[in-house]
Image (cartoon, rainbow, N blue to C red; front, side, top):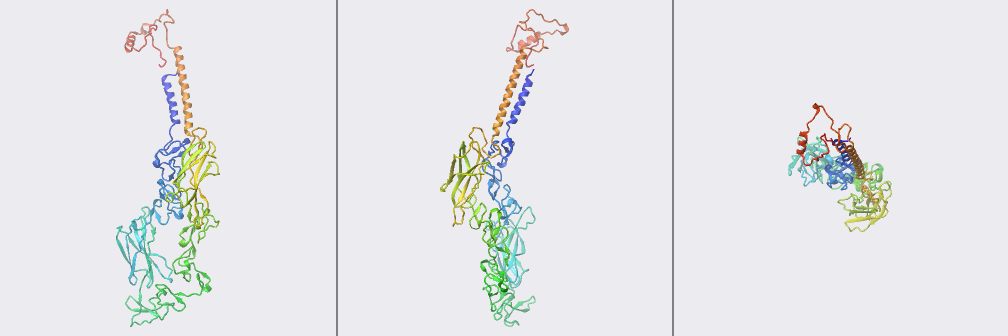
Length: 611
């Protein structure tokens, strides 16, 4: 016989099974078997069927409210995809923290997520020689409101570069000054070493930033250089009475004595010179010429422009066909596609081209482009680029269209017009194409086009071509307008929507791309109904068993019904086993008006099915 305690225990176990079966997913998961991760901000709860974020904010690196199942668009990361990637060669970064694939930031950025911009002085320093080999340089403290970058500055590097064709020169840090971090403060240094007499110098002040994770940080930004070089004047025209002749120059030595030195061989000796270099010539000898100012005498070569050397067999690589002296570009700039001053013998580095190698290649399959114009060997730009030199970033939506409604064979999508400050690429726009496909198919369909581009919001209703009870994805493609006939008319694919179920059967199917089509809720409800049915069957069985117990008491209980045996006598018991029932009867009468009295029953222990 099943008693009350056993019944309660069985019902409790079944209730626990129901609770476990229909319990919510752990925090951070949803979907069938709770196998799909949520991407909600601060690990907030999401809908355990669809993944919809209750707080309407995505986790770092994710986009596409309210489900937040899409990564941030290219070159964006962080919370609300509000940060820009700063990786070399325009590589995409980690969508959560902004780190770059190779671990290196763009040369102008550093720090966590490459979000700290290196400080750079935008004002050139003041520089002058107050005597031979004594250069004074003055500049002001870095000010983030006037200069470029974030700061703070750790220290400054005063760098110089000689302006002469007789010396292969490069920028050389020559003096270090640690920053006092006081905006408005002026610094003045005197440089008296590393200088060549009678040579003019360009001067700039570079800035070195601070990185608390690396000591010291050896990344710095070049400052704005002087427009015109300053001359380290160490020789002077020979005065009357000195022993020097017109074809020499006078050099004052440390003991104040005067030394006569010959002028450069390219000088017109009848005019004399002011120093030892070709730049010091007051005029050039026949067959040579010079630009007025501190410039050298150059041979009036009979070689065609852009060549030099014996029989003009060597080619110059100077910008705009500037003069080259023995291959050195006097204008200080290489031709397009070249680098490596002063000879400019090197091509631009990989994936760069044009003047100063300042532009990036954008060829299909990462092909190397033409170093001058950026054209691609296959004549195909990367899918997101087009135009001359593949330098036009085609317009593309940064997020998929919004699903406004979905019923059987009827899907409504909405989106806003292309905005350059929000989306990717540049306009103007020629047309929008609505595209859809079945999830398991590669074939796309184009049911609608939009050429009226004056609206700011668009609505598309797709009510044909859909197969009942199938999963679909949608996107909006953009075609840009032609610019000077340099643009090939083609569409750029938009971002995909989540999977949308074309529900025509009435079942509660999922409407998001989470790998399963039948909702977890349907499965859970089915199991609940099954367990409830089992509970009902069990309770019915318990009730029937108890009814049987009332009609047929157990054999070990002594029950004697008076109406069934009126003449029967109570069994006689020994005196030591006799029980006085008087108190029991009195207690029973006192305890309850609700207690049923039955005169037909003699005094015996009462039987209960719940005993």
